[in-house]
Image 1 (cartoon, rainbow, N blue to C red):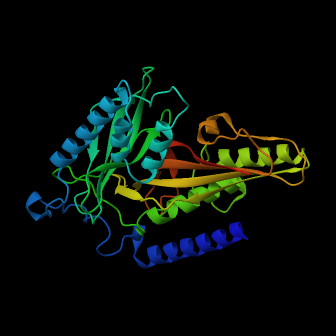
Image 2 (cartoon, rainbow, N blue to C red):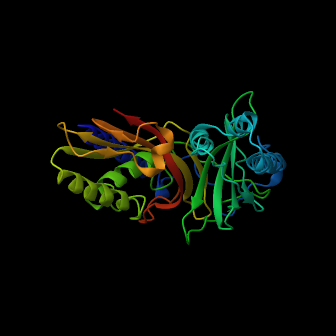
Image 3 (cartoon, one colour):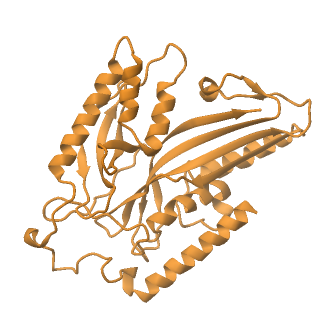
Length: 347
């Protein structure tokens, strides 16, 4: 019932998007929503003043990353150090940071150093204000990975890190469209000038992760480890648990309630940042049954090591995806990910 209900809702939403695009002419760009006509770029004098300046974004990002570096190195660690690190995060990143700081006894939080950022600051936006940055992250082992960071400022509060994802090996950030002064263009939640609107990217991704190549999203999102790969994993696990006769397995994905961010790319598409929640359940159908063991990466989140009736893990996954322009006949692609288990329930 849950899968059918979401599928019907998404089919209806996609139909509405298609109809809207058809009514707005070639490319699905409607009045007041698309890009300026070719050959008539806005001059700096005609551009509205940015709500967040490039200088402010550079200063706030540098301050936040510098503080993270200092606090993660603090020895001996104090409760105040952890509180200060948490206060610099929000939304999904706060949940992941909380888990990192509550690691196994005797461990320290991960320490990173950061390179020079490429700032992606929308000129026109509504509150809460935000901006993104692409910056190389180096871990304590010396591994360098490009990261996509999104900072947000809620009313009356300071800038915090809302989301972070690491680019997949070999993936690159597409060129982001910028105006004459270097500012990006934020896309509306319901923008229909791209193949998948920012609002629909997360639920369609969730469906792809559950149903894989057999689902109705096949062709809309490129196959890969975070889409069809998850679906293959779920199918294999269900078969393995079925061999035990008395154990049941299920794993479902859903769009989170955290913010969705989208920027126009130079090719008319979009760069979209969003989060999914994955809930995996192993249930004992009869007792006694084969033991249900808490996975190693979740042991520090719960005292129990086994479950007699049910084990439920909740994982937060933060993504960066590219979505092509309308009528491009190309699928969206997952290019960045960072996540982990944030909650464990044992009964």
